[in-house]
Figure 1: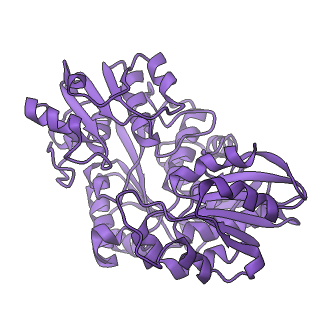
Figure 2: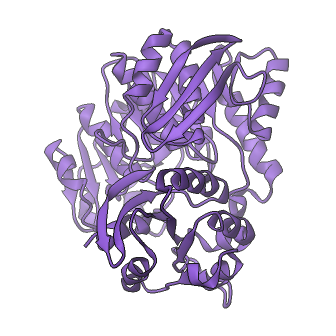
Length: 474
């Protein structure tokens, strides 16, 4: 293991377990990713402490589980600690990181702590540019519904569950982040890649380097295990061909002809999506997932591949998918509001990349019909918004109306003339149907002026915008 987050050695390689880390301090336990991992360690019965200055709603649950919470970042938080866990968001200058290193306490990346918890388990790791959180959630709940009691860590909070937990079974499901290369620390039995799309080029430089990293993830997957790769995406389809030629076991999924797990006859509505599943040219049934959208059905196809790999029967898989509760910030309905022109619904959706935005907006328009869809969008990261402005604007142009906020880019500076207004100007909607609202407090009034009876309003984009529905519903 290494103090350097870019050193991709893995605890699994050395046989290190979560128990070997001793008494741990998790820095920043409020965010979903760190919260889920902290919860996993706590429910595993380990001695866990955490530090967090923000008042996140998930913190009381951690305290109930016995996690000692420090509400300030202080040197004394390191007293009695054997290992410190941080995410990429916590840099080398953080007070607790500096103090840990002064004391000679190991500082591990979040991915190393997940990998240590995986040691000795049959691991299923999900990555990809889009859809990995939902795919991980579907797999997890399918396995739980079948009574397999998996351990899991997800990058999103499953509705009716948590972002992480220790299970009594031998399976471990994890979402892995490609943005900082940390997904390369895992050595899964089953490796799932949902797609490879243009993103994170600030870290990778170009698509060739990004694709090479996903190839390395495949090579890190157990040679006697399974690669689950989307047949609809050019990047993952190419990897499927490459690794099949090398004699590896691959399961492809998607709408494409020739996919090992093929979806057909898709019908999506506000009540969910129904589709036929064909496995190796044999129809295994008509499936229902209680969330709308073709792309949600596509995510579930990866789960079907995993279910078959671990020995579930088709009916068990079908029942598990039908019981899926959803993920917060993925088509999450937050409530209804009576505005100036009638009652409208308010949803929240995490999508910020143009590909994911396009699929989400198309589906939400189906949900809104015959009403209009109004997208309140907070762009996420300056580099992404500037480089992908035309593609993001094209996705927003699919909405009926849009409210664009200023870019959320912690640590970044918005170049003059390159911010939210420039994005709005590129959106192909009538001027009366689009507005730039840089001040948070002005957004609710702008939405009320646009929304009418039967419309759907969705907040979309950077993490802070998930708090906007509370203001819209007041």
